[in-house]
Image (cartoon, rainbow, N blue to C red; front, side, top):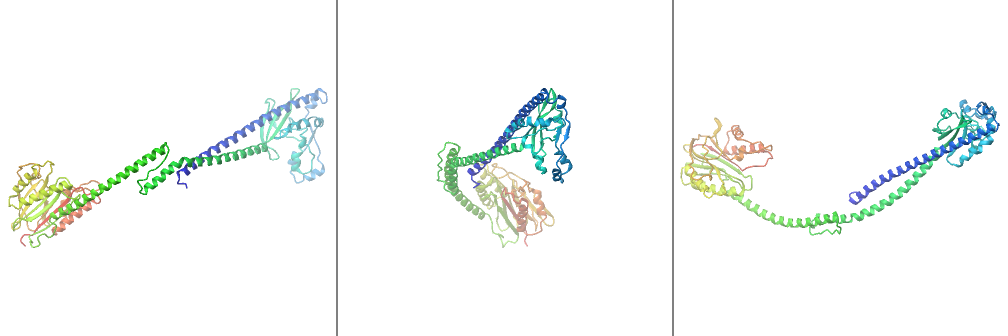
Length: 565
């Protein structure tokens, strides 16, 4: 399922939407929480300042009506109210410092008893706000002469209950509040002795322009947090419902929008299975429609291309077959049965020719001119492939024909060169080495036409390159006068002829084999027959080139002169 683009697209959109909804919900909850706390603070400030003003006026009236003097009003002397023995007995497991916290007092002047009937109902009016926990008047020492009705219950002997419900006439000192005579209000966030988190907002109370105490308003953050959590739950549920609806809508919309793409995918699947005649039908003018049109054109072009390819392949296969026949014919044109003259012990001869392409431009040949004179030829035609092969056939035929007419070798080269040079519009040429060895005398007559010099020698004296006049290659310049040369070949000497496919072979890194490497290989070989020499050299070339592509035709011809043994 996840492999489908429509599913992945829907999944991504849902994730993005889910993140946005989560962020938005969090923002709403935090913003609403902030607004609620700001509202509580404003409400608390107004209540504290209102209560402080009312309490100040009440205490001013107490002085003005001479119920208590101003001096008595500011007399904060407290007298402890003795605890009943039964209460003390009930508190026997409670630490003394905690019992002291719950201790109640009266003003020495009796002001607190008067205020019990005067301010309790006024303080209770503030409880119309459900978030309010207490609204109480305190003097500068933190003494509460009269608390709210819900905190004015009698002691029961249950410490936890008494600490929570009997808070009137106790001391809750707060030095910061006691010292505040300038700020219109103070906010303090704290843990109540009951463990509840509270916001206490206090405003100073002045009597006859003197700081008497403060009016304190307490809000329970528990109720506020409950309200915030309730809001968060409602928002989460609402957003979840919206997200669910949006997911369904996105899924349906994506499926609808992806339908053309699904059609395109199905069409591609059919085409991939070989049905190139299938046309994809997508009725949209968007990118998918353009893609379908392009794909239909591609399949049409591909179908046409395959038809053309089949025709071309058939032609190539026919050409390849013809080339293979040509290759076979070319191989059979060269001497390929060894030993070629088993009844003639004067010479040991072996040769190979490996084309770089289907057919080669290299060739070798050898034959007897008469009973005593043995002719051998090696040649390398310029270029490769079919043109070189055709030029090679002409060159080979001319050389053999002219050589068998008992002409001098320079005359043979002269005649063949003129025949090849005439009307040579392709400017092709052939390097050549031709030699005639008299098997009785060991005299070698030869002409070199721009070819690589042969290697001669034997195992005792070593091998060297034969000094030759290069002359020019055949087919370049008409009427060129070639020079023939002679050399005495000793019994057991070898004559090694080759083409530049040997010395110019390259390895995988582009390094060339070179003339020096070939000579070193020959000098390191044992005194074996001609076949050994040829195969050993070919093996060394393969070890050198490894997996590198063969760049040129490779031809090797080796002759061992045995004399009249």
